[in-house]
Length: 255
Image (cartoon, rainbow, N blue to C red; front, side, top):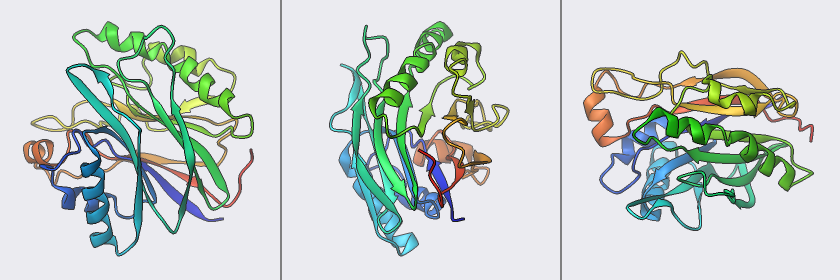
Protein backbone atom coordinates (compact mmCIF):
# COMPACT_ATOMS: atom_id res chain seq x y z
CA UNK A 1 0.00 0.00 0.00
CA UNK A 2 1.12 3.54 -0.68
CA UNK A 3 1.47 5.88 2.26
CA UNK A 4 1.21 9.61 2.71
CA UNK A 5 1.98 12.07 5.43
CA UNK A 6 -0.99 14.36 5.82
CA UNK A 7 0.23 17.56 7.33
CA UNK A 8 -1.14 20.60 9.08
CA UNK A 9 1.13 23.56 9.73
CA UNK A 10 -0.02 26.50 11.78
CA UNK A 11 1.87 29.46 10.46
CA UNK A 12 0.85 32.26 12.80
CA UNK A 13 0.31 35.26 10.52
CA UNK A 14 1.19 34.11 7.01
CA UNK A 15 2.25 37.36 5.40
CA UNK A 16 5.14 38.87 3.54
CA UNK A 17 7.45 39.56 6.48
CA UNK A 18 7.69 35.88 7.46
CA UNK A 19 10.66 33.70 6.47
CA UNK A 20 9.06 31.51 3.82
CA UNK A 21 12.29 29.72 2.98
CA UNK A 22 12.49 28.25 6.49
CA UNK A 23 8.80 27.41 6.37
CA UNK A 24 9.12 25.67 3.01
CA UNK A 25 12.22 23.71 4.01
CA UNK A 26 10.39 22.32 7.03
CA UNK A 27 7.34 21.09 5.12
CA UNK A 28 8.58 20.23 1.62
CA UNK A 29 8.30 16.44 2.02
CA UNK A 30 4.58 16.51 2.76
CA UNK A 31 1.90 16.23 0.13
CA UNK A 32 -0.84 18.42 1.62
CA UNK A 33 -0.73 21.19 4.18
CA UNK A 34 -3.59 23.00 5.90
CA UNK A 35 -3.02 26.52 7.20
CA UNK A 36 -4.73 28.89 9.62
CA UNK A 37 -3.91 32.53 10.38
CA UNK A 38 -3.48 33.31 6.69
CA UNK A 39 -3.52 37.09 6.37
CA UNK A 40 -3.75 37.37 2.59
CA UNK A 41 -3.37 35.41 -0.64
CA UNK A 42 0.12 36.79 -1.24
CA UNK A 43 1.35 34.79 1.74
CA UNK A 44 0.18 31.54 0.15
CA UNK A 45 1.70 32.54 -3.18
CA UNK A 46 5.06 33.18 -1.53
CA UNK A 47 4.88 29.86 0.33
CA UNK A 48 4.14 27.99 -2.91
CA UNK A 49 7.00 29.77 -4.68
CA UNK A 50 9.42 28.76 -1.95
CA UNK A 51 8.12 25.19 -1.82
CA UNK A 52 8.75 24.83 -5.53
CA UNK A 53 12.30 26.15 -5.11
CA UNK A 54 13.27 23.84 -2.25
CA UNK A 55 11.44 20.71 -3.44
CA UNK A 56 11.74 20.88 -7.26
CA UNK A 57 8.04 19.94 -7.41
CA UNK A 58 4.93 21.76 -8.57
CA UNK A 59 2.58 23.04 -5.87
CA UNK A 60 -0.87 24.63 -5.85
CA UNK A 61 -3.03 26.29 -3.23
CA UNK A 62 -6.65 26.88 -2.27
CA UNK A 63 -7.73 29.76 -0.05
CA UNK A 64 -11.10 30.32 1.61
CA UNK A 65 -13.25 32.82 -0.33
CA UNK A 66 -13.19 35.36 2.47
CA UNK A 67 -11.61 35.98 5.86
CA UNK A 68 -13.45 35.34 9.13
CA UNK A 69 -13.16 36.77 12.62
CA UNK A 70 -13.98 40.08 14.26
CA UNK A 71 -14.05 43.58 12.80
CA UNK A 72 -10.63 44.16 14.34
CA UNK A 73 -9.00 40.93 13.16
CA UNK A 74 -9.84 38.50 10.38
CA UNK A 75 -7.96 35.62 8.79
CA UNK A 76 -8.29 33.17 5.91
CA UNK A 77 -7.90 29.40 5.83
CA UNK A 78 -5.64 27.85 3.22
CA UNK A 79 -4.30 24.61 1.78
CA UNK A 80 -1.16 23.98 -0.26
CA UNK A 81 -0.54 20.66 -1.97
CA UNK A 82 1.65 18.86 -4.49
CA UNK A 83 -0.07 19.05 -7.87
CA UNK A 84 1.09 15.66 -9.16
CA UNK A 85 -0.06 13.76 -6.05
CA UNK A 86 -3.11 15.55 -4.69
CA UNK A 87 -6.41 16.25 -6.43
CA UNK A 88 -8.51 19.15 -5.18
CA UNK A 89 -12.17 18.08 -5.35
CA UNK A 90 -13.76 21.38 -4.36
CA UNK A 91 -14.81 23.35 -1.33
CA UNK A 92 -17.40 22.33 1.25
CA UNK A 93 -17.53 25.95 2.42
CA UNK A 94 -17.81 27.36 5.91
CA UNK A 95 -19.67 25.83 8.82
CA UNK A 96 -22.86 27.95 9.10
CA UNK A 97 -22.39 28.48 12.87
CA UNK A 98 -26.04 28.68 13.98
CA UNK A 99 -26.35 31.02 16.92
CA UNK A 100 -23.01 32.68 16.09
CA UNK A 101 -21.17 30.72 18.77
CA UNK A 102 -17.72 30.70 17.12
CA UNK A 103 -15.34 33.61 16.61
CA UNK A 104 -14.13 32.10 13.30
CA UNK A 105 -16.32 29.69 11.35
CA UNK A 106 -14.46 26.48 10.37
CA UNK A 107 -13.81 25.85 6.69
CA UNK A 108 -13.58 22.59 4.73
CA UNK A 109 -12.38 21.34 1.36
CA UNK A 110 -12.30 17.92 -0.30
CA UNK A 111 -9.17 16.21 -1.59
CA UNK A 112 -8.12 12.87 -3.05
CA UNK A 113 -4.70 11.21 -2.85
CA UNK A 114 -4.38 7.88 -4.64
CA UNK A 115 -7.59 6.09 -3.57
CA UNK A 116 -8.09 8.00 -0.33
CA UNK A 117 -10.55 10.90 -0.48
CA UNK A 118 -11.45 13.02 2.52
CA UNK A 119 -12.91 16.26 3.81
CA UNK A 120 -10.25 18.42 5.48
CA UNK A 121 -11.81 20.79 8.04
CA UNK A 122 -9.70 23.64 9.45
CA UNK A 123 -10.47 25.44 12.70
CA UNK A 124 -8.82 28.26 14.61
CA UNK A 125 -10.61 28.53 17.94
CA UNK A 126 -10.86 31.60 20.13
CA UNK A 127 -8.16 32.30 22.69
CA UNK A 128 -10.00 35.05 24.51
CA UNK A 129 -9.43 36.36 28.00
CA UNK A 130 -10.82 33.32 29.82
CA UNK A 131 -10.48 29.58 29.35
CA UNK A 132 -14.27 29.37 29.60
CA UNK A 133 -14.50 31.11 26.21
CA UNK A 134 -12.34 28.42 24.63
CA UNK A 135 -14.34 25.66 26.22
CA UNK A 136 -17.60 27.19 25.01
CA UNK A 137 -16.29 26.83 21.44
CA UNK A 138 -15.00 23.32 22.08
CA UNK A 139 -18.55 22.31 23.04
CA UNK A 140 -19.53 23.06 19.40
CA UNK A 141 -17.12 20.54 17.84
CA UNK A 142 -19.67 17.72 17.82
CA UNK A 143 -22.04 19.85 15.74
CA UNK A 144 -19.21 20.84 13.41
CA UNK A 145 -18.30 17.21 12.85
CA UNK A 146 -21.94 16.19 12.30
CA UNK A 147 -22.51 19.02 9.84
CA UNK A 148 -19.67 18.02 7.53
CA UNK A 149 -20.31 14.30 8.05
CA UNK A 150 -23.93 14.68 6.97
CA UNK A 151 -23.25 17.18 4.17
CA UNK A 152 -22.04 14.47 1.78
CA UNK A 153 -23.46 10.99 2.29
CA UNK A 154 -20.76 9.52 0.03
CA UNK A 155 -17.81 10.96 1.98
CA UNK A 156 -17.26 9.73 5.54
CA UNK A 157 -13.61 10.61 6.11
CA UNK A 158 -13.83 13.88 8.05
CA UNK A 159 -10.53 15.20 9.39
CA UNK A 160 -10.77 18.18 11.74
CA UNK A 161 -7.50 19.98 12.37
CA UNK A 162 -6.25 23.25 13.69
CA UNK A 163 -5.39 25.38 16.67
CA UNK A 164 -7.99 24.51 19.31
CA UNK A 165 -6.40 26.66 22.05
CA UNK A 166 -7.04 23.72 24.37
CA UNK A 167 -5.44 20.28 24.66
CA UNK A 168 -7.47 17.75 22.69
CA UNK A 169 -8.11 15.70 25.84
CA UNK A 170 -9.87 18.61 27.57
CA UNK A 171 -13.23 17.58 28.98
CA UNK A 172 -15.03 20.15 26.83
CA UNK A 173 -14.42 17.96 23.76
CA UNK A 174 -16.28 15.05 25.36
CA UNK A 175 -19.46 15.65 23.36
CA UNK A 176 -17.43 15.16 20.19
CA UNK A 177 -15.79 12.02 21.56
CA UNK A 178 -19.20 10.63 22.58
CA UNK A 179 -20.43 10.53 18.97
CA UNK A 180 -20.64 6.79 18.10
CA UNK A 181 -18.06 7.10 15.30
CA UNK A 182 -15.07 6.20 17.50
CA UNK A 183 -13.55 9.67 17.29
CA UNK A 184 -10.02 10.15 18.58
CA UNK A 185 -7.36 12.84 18.66
CA UNK A 186 -4.36 11.88 16.55
CA UNK A 187 -1.55 13.47 18.59
CA UNK A 188 -0.74 12.65 22.21
CA UNK A 189 -1.63 15.81 24.19
CA UNK A 190 1.61 15.48 26.18
CA UNK A 191 3.40 16.61 22.99
CA UNK A 192 3.83 20.39 23.06
CA UNK A 193 2.98 22.15 19.79
CA UNK A 194 3.25 25.87 20.60
CA UNK A 195 6.48 27.82 21.00
CA UNK A 196 7.20 30.05 23.97
CA UNK A 197 10.16 32.37 24.45
CA UNK A 198 12.10 29.71 26.39
CA UNK A 199 10.80 26.46 24.95
CA UNK A 200 7.65 24.59 23.97
CA UNK A 201 4.55 25.76 25.77
CA UNK A 202 1.16 24.10 25.10
CA UNK A 203 -0.46 21.23 23.20
CA UNK A 204 -3.14 23.27 21.46
CA UNK A 205 -2.82 21.86 17.93
CA UNK A 206 -4.22 18.50 16.90
CA UNK A 207 -6.39 16.41 14.58
CA UNK A 208 -9.73 14.77 15.32
CA UNK A 209 -10.63 11.75 13.18
CA UNK A 210 -13.11 8.89 13.21
CA UNK A 211 -11.58 5.42 13.43
CA UNK A 212 -14.93 4.02 12.32
CA UNK A 213 -14.41 5.62 8.91
CA UNK A 214 -10.78 6.72 8.62
CA UNK A 215 -9.30 3.29 9.08
CA UNK A 216 -6.40 4.43 6.91
CA UNK A 217 -4.80 6.22 9.89
CA UNK A 218 -1.55 4.46 10.75
CA UNK A 219 -1.28 5.77 14.31
CA UNK A 220 1.83 7.75 13.35
CA UNK A 221 1.59 11.46 14.19
CA UNK A 222 3.43 14.22 15.99
CA UNK A 223 5.01 17.66 15.88
CA UNK A 224 8.18 18.74 14.09
CA UNK A 225 10.76 20.87 15.89
CA UNK A 226 11.67 23.68 13.48
CA UNK A 227 13.27 25.90 16.13
CA UNK A 228 16.87 24.64 16.28
CA UNK A 229 16.67 25.89 19.84
CA UNK A 230 16.05 29.46 18.66
CA UNK A 231 12.61 29.90 20.15
CA UNK A 232 12.41 33.69 20.03
CA UNK A 233 13.63 33.94 16.43
CA UNK A 234 11.28 31.18 15.31
CA UNK A 235 8.29 32.86 16.95
CA UNK A 236 9.17 36.17 15.32
CA UNK A 237 10.21 35.08 11.83
CA UNK A 238 8.44 31.77 11.18
CA UNK A 239 5.62 30.79 13.56
CA UNK A 240 4.69 30.42 17.20
CA UNK A 241 3.42 26.90 16.43
CA UNK A 242 5.20 23.74 15.41
CA UNK A 243 4.03 21.91 12.30
CA UNK A 244 1.94 18.88 13.25
CA UNK A 245 1.32 15.82 11.10
CA UNK A 246 -0.48 12.51 10.81
CA UNK A 247 0.20 9.59 8.50
CA UNK A 248 -2.45 7.65 6.58
CA UNK A 249 -2.53 4.83 4.03
CA UNK A 250 -3.75 5.89 0.62
CA UNK A 251 -3.93 2.65 -1.35
CA UNK A 252 -7.53 1.91 -0.41
CA UNK A 253 -10.61 3.88 0.51
CA UNK A 254 -13.51 2.44 2.49
CA UNK A 255 -16.23 5.06 1.95
